[in-house]
Image (tube, rainbow, N blue to C red; front, top):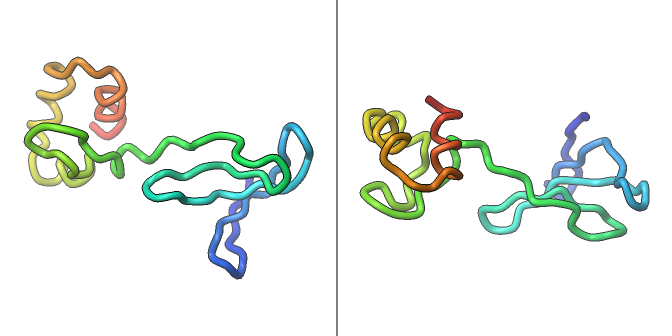
Amino acid sequence: MKIMTNPVEEEYIETNCDKCSSRQYLKQRGKHIGLYCDECGWKKWMRQKPEKFEMPFGKYRLKTLGWIKEEDPEYLEWAVIGLDSENIKSRIREIL
């Protein structure tokens, strides 16, 4: 899969849609990035890199995991044990 940028600053991926075989590209809407098909519409949302994920609550609300790792890595070590959210814990594990 090769990524290149087109003239309107969207990143194209050299791959075809499973449904209609047209070209797909990455597109950002707000903080979310999706794999988009020109013919069918959205194919799927893509998971952000863990270091770009923002904590949704707590002491570091709206800070990225990458920032927290630099500033307070002990917090992330605690969070992996202390939080209930498996989604957040799995993202933290990816960067520790």
